[in-house]
Length: 91
Length: 441
Image (cartoon, rainbow over all chains, first blue to last red):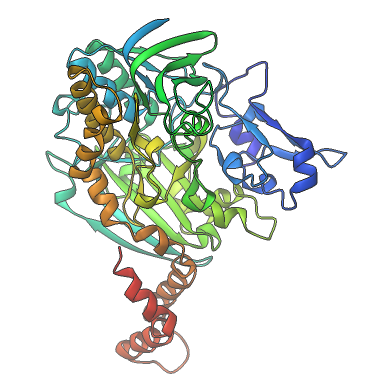
């Protein structure tokens, strides 16, 4: 089962603004390892055509893994606004 | 500015247990929960050890929506090809006062939120707290080095609400407390990430597969190739008509891997294991969830209280992975219970400074919460030993395989196969050293 299909099972209430923002300058210049590409249980991080990190925050499970793992602290990471984001029913 | 006696940030188990105790005692309390309902943002494995929280708020548990009473405990050693399982079914685990039950957070938290409301507390969902209001300390807002700051309320969007005491039951990430300088952000070495699928199966199928009477449940932990050498393991809990199947991975070991392994792939591999696939066969995955979890033990429990605030549950680092017992929700409930008692006392005395709230920590030290965390003080360091997740599952399953093998070579006596296997796999300097360190559990 691919990860998109798994995320497709969850209820997400989409906010109009992202709750995770990447400081691309910090990410590009100080981070070698880019662990966010592999640690995220929802596989939301990707490099774009320019080699810049992007995050598909709409599918965020709000687990905090990327925040805790990002050593250069390139992430501005908040919870989504009240009533937005993932809404678990059976976890 | 509107003002209430107590604001609880976070309507999970710690926050609701705090609010229930206060509301029951007639204290004005407001719980702010950012999800659509309590439990909407929470993830558990999930089993709640009820044995020690039963006596706290005894009236709450009789009708609580537990999934199944855990009467069977299984621990499995896993390699790519093999799985050796030790299983214990004990009448003592069940009965009238069972030791533990599986839970679904969206059900149990919502139930407790209703109980808080019935007791006269306010539970406000869909309300995210954006910051703490402080006075004194360093700087105008008290942010940064806020050690000396007093917490006087919260900010939610454009609203500010004052409070005599703010209870930070905001979960493991502790974003608000960290921002206000009340604690450090948890380090990768002190955390893990757990993620799981909830897989629906008919109740009868669950009972057949794990040999359970109706209402009884199983909890199965898996050590070995499940985590591909990373500290952690797999878990399986039986709910009423679903199972929770997941993986927990030590954050530091996960992030320091040099290959391209993506964390989420391990669960699919686990599901496809020849000994696991039949357990989930025919089931339909209905939800996927993930959450960080604190595993630093007592050494990483932050300062628990200060002027006008205290920390409870995961926000206070109150969780314990002792390899075969994994706890957190019982600590959350108990910390909320003791928080309520300490706050009620502080309010009655008109003293909500750190000195007035200090009985919170004393209560936790006298309770099983800090006592059990203290007993397990050596466990987090022990779990960093990778042989637990590589060598031992390999060795145990190999020995078991050899004992059960009928092969073409010259037959050996059972005792000789056993002793040879033990000598070869368990009598090395490293394993003897491990044996000594295991006494710390």
